[in-house]
Amino acid sequence: MNISLIIISLFLLLALYLGISSTRGKEMSMEQWTVGGRGFGTLFIFFLIAGEVYTTFTFLGGSGWTFTRGAAVYYVPAYIFLAYVLSYWFIPKIWKYCKENNLISQPDYFVSKYKSTALGVLVAIVGCVALIPYIVIQFKGLGIIVSQASYGTISPVVASCIGAAVVATYVMVSGIHGSAWTAIIKDFMILIVVIFLGIYIPFHYFGGIKPMFEAVEMVKPELLTLADTGFSNSWFTSTVIFNAIGFYILPTSFMVILSAKSAKSLKKNAITLPLYTILLLFIFFVGFAAITVIPELDAAQGDLALLTLAIKTFDPWVIGIIGAAGLLTALVPCSVMLMSSAAGLTQNLYKVIVPKASDKHLLTVSKLFIVIISLIALYFTITGGEAMAILNIMSYSLIVQLAPALFLSIQRNNMITKEGAFMGIVTGVIVVLVMTLKGIGIGDLLPQAPQWVQDINGSFVALTSNIIVMLIVSIVSRAFASIKHTKLEEAK
Picture 1 (tube, helix red, strand yellow):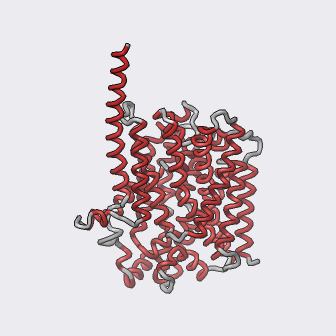
Picture 2 (cartoon, rainbow, N blue to C red):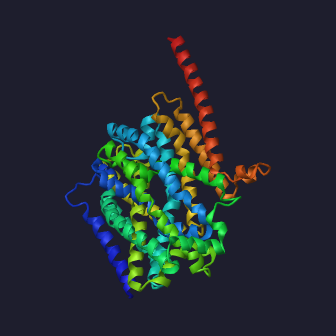
């Protein structure tokens, strides 16, 4: 066993230990397991929300997209910054409503706001389906990181399976408590590794960051600006908007905010987290450096850019630390994803079928869902071949279909009915799945439209369809309800 693999293994065991030991002195209930008894302060919330940003996409997808697509990768920090700005205004309102009504999951919120059990079932299923591609990203990334960092000693499939077993174990035992404690170690590791790589590599190979960009400009100047077609300005703008809307609507982010002790801590994080997100630029520097340092790397292998460059540059013990940081970027967000999916299905699907189930019984069912979701994600990890960033965008395209009904529910006089919300979401999800599976974009639907229109993120079609159907059905259902009420009054 090489030193790199030993270091990675030690951090894997540390994550497992922290996850299991975090429940010491706590009696687990559904509320404790999912939202930590709503007792997390500013620091824990900071690390948990940051965990949604620094995933394996940070390590692999971020540097990989920089290597293959260049400036297009800047959509990532752009949408995260915008998401934090939006969160300052609407997240505290959601937190307050959920606390007052003792809600512990995203589907619970929809059920309470729209007085519809069926809508809760739909939201739970959509949330789970939307998160599975993202869980696949974490499992796939974990496999690549461990395999590469161990110099091929462990295969990606075996690494993914081991990682999935570890994260499922500590989530089942400790829920969000394990995620919170592991997130602290993970974010300190990320802070050190990302800054080190982003500064050392450009100076080591080019003598600085500016000379690095000058070297890239000499060989591939097109990567330093957005493309005229495809990943163009209109694609960038629309993708930033859609992903910003979807960031806090993801069941993971939604669950994290419910674990906060106060609305004030959420506002503090909305202010400070953008500064932490700037660290993403250091990962992009590594991707830009790889363009000229390892030009032999095929574009299809872009996700390997960071690790390939690191192995070329550093000794095995350094690779072990980098690999350990990458490992934690998979475990922490993945644990919250599994837990939020399982909690949503338990609270709003299983509980509908078995309404008299006790809290202890529901906790057991949630843990069973953890195993089922992990196995499904592992299956797609082993058999699927999509690029990480595309999977990421698909997840947001699905989850953003919940946005119209959620945002309008915050309004004092919500004009949307439960029927309208339900049908709007169903319509949006169907359009996303059809367009994704058939590879249809706006350019295919509007071939005669100007290029900037064709390049708009295809989610716009699904979201527009969602809103139109939601409004029409709400108007019609309100009209029918009014007629029914009038007839009942006349009958009296």
